[in-house]
Figure 1 (cartoon, rainbow, N blue to C red):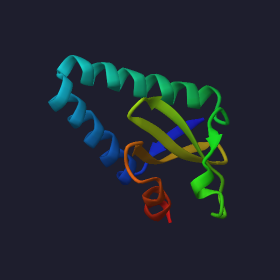
Figure 2 (spheres, rainbow, N blue to C red):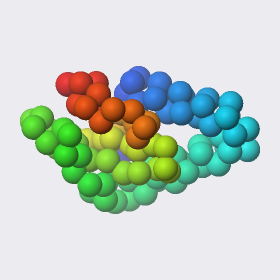
Figure 3 (cartoon, rainbow, N blue to C red):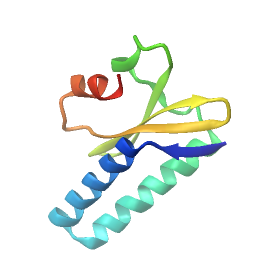
Length: 103
């Protein structure tokens, strides 16, 4: 399996990484990036490991999510042999906003 990030997901990942750097320092940002990379590698091995995202259950495609750390989760869908990471979600945001961003 291969992974493709949407621009929206890349932007979300960068925003969270920048927040961690500004709030906790560069070392914590590096740790966060390692956590993200570890989660993506796990997705490549076990693409269905994530839970079906309930906020997106009414959409025609199945979206799943996995928690990266206490601040974020990866929202993705699988088409054939490609994992599309469609959102890198800050879990402190309003959950309803996730559905609006994906639609």
